[in-house]
Length: 157
Image (cartoon, rainbow, N blue to C red; front, side, top):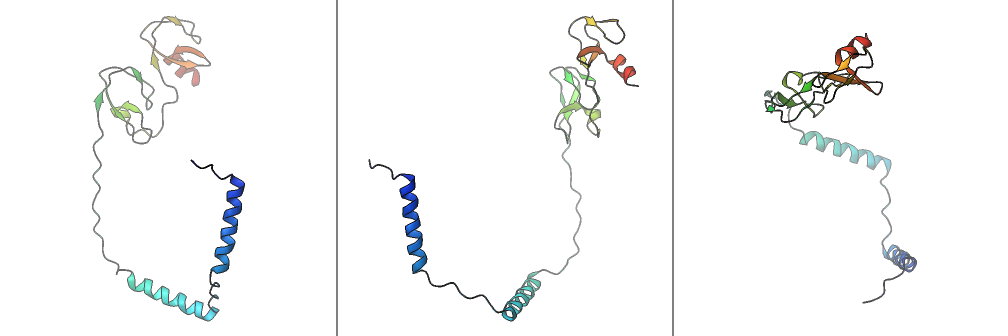
């Protein structure tokens, strides 16, 4: 197998070939005079006008949107639309703009939920009301701690 040509020699060879090719090319044509350029422009504009079809009355056909795919949730998660939990068995669909799973009723919402809620898996203490959090209650995160969802809603007001 032959040894590859080093980069700098390859560049020099390409430069030499380019100068040889440019010397053997015919001279570039002179540009049109301004009047010839103007008449050429007018001729092209006339050709394009002739090629354009006559304006026709278009019939507007309503576009049928595919119905949203609705499935039953298999896993517990939080709805991005309302912030409430999605439990297994709830009917869910994808939001058209966000692409996230939401309740069927939340599909047409314009804004996401401000604070998503989850179902508590462990017992704990609410930092806002200082009452206990029982497993299965709705909780949300406020300032790096878990609190009841209702306490967070009242604290925002």
